[in-house]
Length: 151
Image 1 (tube, rainbow, N blue to C red):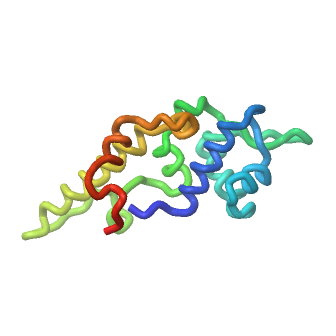
Image 2: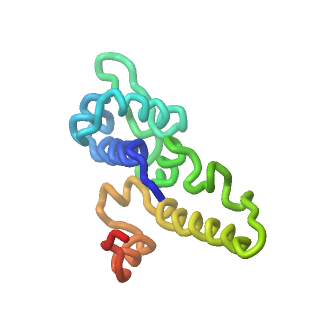
């Protein structure tokens, strides 16, 4: 799985927003705090607003606010809001892919890959990131052999 800059920036912006004492922050404040290009963040925040994950506040005290409690917004919600489905094969849902002959079981591998990604991203919330208390589904993978090796 390739984690895009959009997904990375979106999650970081929401964690930053969740950690704000006042609960809201401007685009500039979020961009500066997380070293995210402001114009890129503007487009990301628009996607997050469209998905109902943030609210835009107008006026001199305007900015952005989480639309839901941080412990109810999963990383999967954020990734889907800015990038679409978590896993696709050539732009198609894994269960819709068909192979013939020796490659036929490959479809099941792609479906299992999506299920694995969901296990981590759907169990981890913005609140988990903010507290640093990650779910067992994540921490158990961190201790698996080779977890920190790039292969």
